[in-house]
Amino acid sequence: MWNYWKQRAIEAGHDARLISAKLVSAVRQNQKTDKNDALAIVQASLLPEVRFISGKSVKQQQLQSIKRLRELAIKHRDALKKQILALLLELNIGCQMEVPV
Image 1 (cartoon, one colour):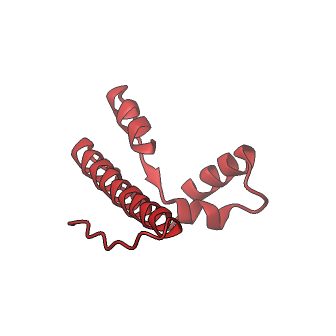
Image 2: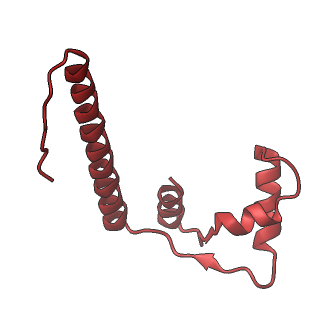
């Protein structure tokens, strides 16, 4: 999501930079609220040793999305396999299911 806003800001002619979330969370002093997050972002951007991170390209975002979808599909496949085996065992039907990877 942040990469999206960075790309839109650059298209509008702004100098957009991303700050590491770890740095911002280290600077935040109180509970995590929108107000405290905004204050921490401003404070982190003013630090002398702040390092800005590079955003992902559209191609990198697409590859990351494909990888996440594949991981989710594998997780769902394995869960479904376990549910079917448990149901068969409840019905006293022994079965060895091999799912190719």
